[in-house]
Length: 241
Image (cartoon, rainbow, N blue to C red; front, side, top):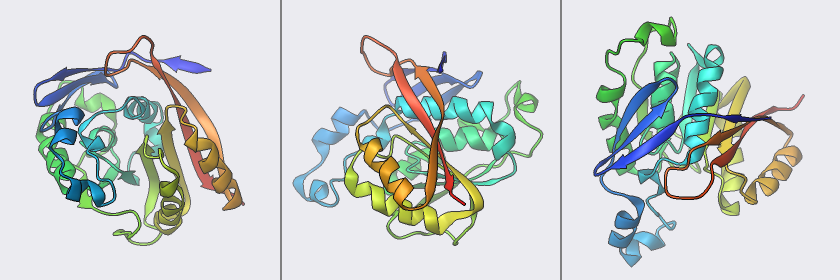
């Protein structure tokens, strides 16, 4: 069953204004994707094709945030890791819900903006007491290449990512990281908008001893002009057996 949510975002110069999880969020950013893309030189692009996808807020992240709210008791008080956190939106949502969050990204500039987005979003607000009973703390932001884990083995109760699986070359490194970082009995959430690559990912998961089940399907408003809402699959993964 597809759940329709009213989560939406409005783009303004230098920021994205988000309405999600029953409140408003402000995400500062340097520019939009197209502008930053045009500023990248050939040398920078050649290094792992480092395109600035982090500067946008993707529909998968909106769906993931709403799913977190619906499952807040599962992450509150837990050690969680946002894999490819970008501007920090889902890490901030989880911290607001009482999780202990590590936000990691490949790009130092992304984390600089994620850190700048803490004061406006985790300060005092009228419904603070309604989120959860846990003491909220800002995420820990860490530059990390998932091919070279920078977290202790077995230290994360939850790991999640929003639309991080869009090329085959990412699949095996992500599984290696999950096997390293996830605690015994830990869970993974991956939100993705029906990309073909996910069939390959699911097959690799099964071969590697993982169970992947679709926990939800969310319909969210697109952030840019298009005719219809975006359907996002929310997958929950855990080690089989």
